[in-house]
Amino acid sequence: MNIVDTHPHIVSEDTDAFPISPIGGKRSEWSHKRSVTAEQLIEAMDEAGVAKAAIVHSSTTYGFNCDYVADAISRYSDRLTGVFSVNVTEPDGPEKMQHWIDRGFTGMRLYLQGSTMKEAWVAMDDKRIYPCYELAAEAGLSVATNLKAKNFGELETVMTDFPTVNFFLDHLGGVKFDDGAPFEAAAPLWALAKYPNLYIKLVTGKFLAADNGASTSATMFAKLVEEFGADRLAWGSNFPSAEGSYADVVKTALDGLASLPQDQQDWIMGKTAQSLYPTLKG
Image (cartoon, rainbow, N blue to C red; front, side, top):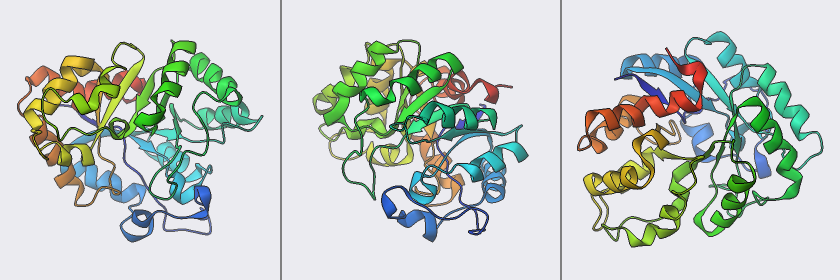
């Protein structure tokens, strides 16, 4: 199995070269308590048997300055690509996007809310963002987002308006699965399966939650494959935001998917990532 990670983070130890400037003004807890450098991530990938990765820029560490990830992917171009963030509401958003594209990034992320920002700071279907989506379509960029289920309508709007852009939903939109099969509580997520340009990211927290309540890993991941197909599901570690060693995080994913046929595991653990980030093929 060729394993590709769609969601690790890195943080530099050099705060002079790469100043801390978190989005919203508050730094995430993980980024200063258990962060890893690019070199440490590569070492951990080697130990865990992970071939390649799409590094997701840490907005809660560096805001919209993606220099450290750019530096990492230039030094490890055979192993890494990058997913940048820009202020998509500003008129120079497309210009900033092109800057990061020119520095080797092949994906963009809309970090809308999270542990340090409880409410979304912008709507995905805000018309100010449309020039950025237009450039994403032209450049063949995937667009990741951590949008929550209550705002899925915004995602439907942009997926319809930009059908050639592949959107990549983080954290399953925060829907719950503890009611067990057929997972009626996750109905808002199932309603999105009809959009062929939507891909779903399966991060460590969701693997850990798969066996909560009436849910089991076997039933939850089988349902996700049934709805979206394995070729639209991709594993992401969320390391080191996800606690534990990188090897443990990888094992958690492999154990969670063990009940699926091998070809479906292969898509989720690597092949889907390579379709979203073609530079990671090979």
